[in-house]
Length: 215
Image 1 (spheres, helix red, strand yellow):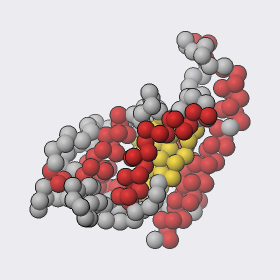
Image 2: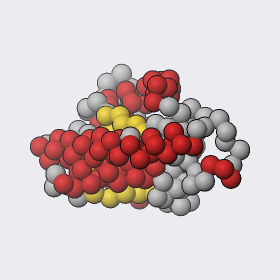
Image 3: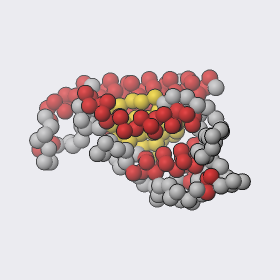
Image 4: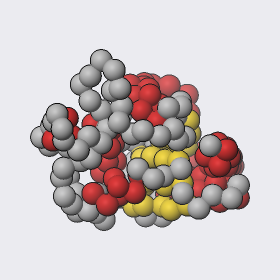
């Protein structure tokens, strides 16, 4: 199964649309899919208890017990993982960060050898949506380079990245203090470019499914 995680507070927003497009692509290649919304869950981030690193302990298992716990268990059997978030102040949402921290930290030991405990090779991807123009994409992605690298190391193959820029944020811009943006240009981008970004996400999901099914 290909799992996608929506780190946005909006269940039907830009990030959710991109994630669903990726899952549609995966489904078209024969994969089972599931979209999980993180915001409704009652959960917290890693508390650095180090239970996952104790000698003789349960390596690869987060000791915390909340509504993220069954999802972390489900991730152990996934054929592919897609993480999605809007970008708020050059960072992903706390909800996605909680999942990433608990997933990655519980699967990592402080050892010189056999550092990663996930134990399987699966494809992964990150989907980001943001309101700034596409020419700022490189600076938006820069803070996440280490996470992308570590995820690729843990899962055994490099993560793919897919973005949707210049996000349409309001139904009616006139109701908000937002004259920094050109509403007409935003709308035109939404109508003309966002469908192309959705198609990129769909193709990425299709590639992911084909990689997973070949393993």
